[in-house]
Length: 243
Image (cartoon, rainbow, N blue to C red; front, side, top):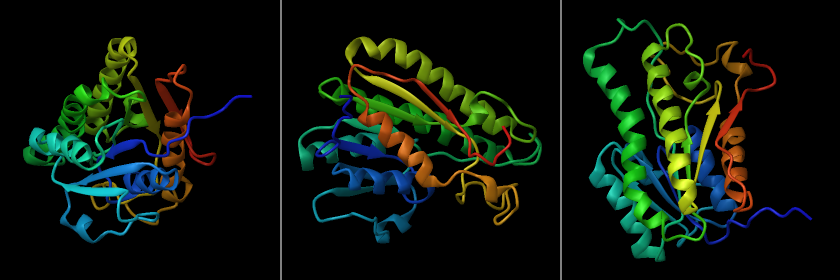
């Protein structure tokens, strides 16, 4: 009989945890019995209550995961509280939709920094601990835009293509050490991502998108796969969205 792994007592960090895919993933992991470090840039995370949260199963770490100091803290607090570290979900990101000329240099730099360095720095911080885990996983939440650049998404798509290249190289490098690297590439998801920056809420198109819980379920399934299995790319759309 084919048996999925149990995530109870596994120690997982999730970046971009305060809303959307990140929040849904935290709640899915808590439901599975995991201990979670939830990272977010926003001060609002101090008051967020996650479904399934109890006194000893969740820690919040505030700050940008594009900052190596914050990333080091994500790992260190896990060790201080629970004694080890097993999994990194690199989910945080930023974006906008529009022409490559529509936004300021600072806004462009923010997207590139958050999506690329905000993926690389958490991995660099986590990897020494992951090498000592008996269930190490890195899951990078990217986008369908990482494989197909759509109009008015050039800068965002470029950062997602970078994540695809990063994951492919790391998979080949780290699988020999038993560290699995998986890339999750959803199409449109019903979140607050880029609202007011080329994306409008309650639009007809948005109603066809995936739910954040759909993506969280994919992430949880990846982590529950037997350790003999590694799957690098999960590309998926809702049934109703045009690919």
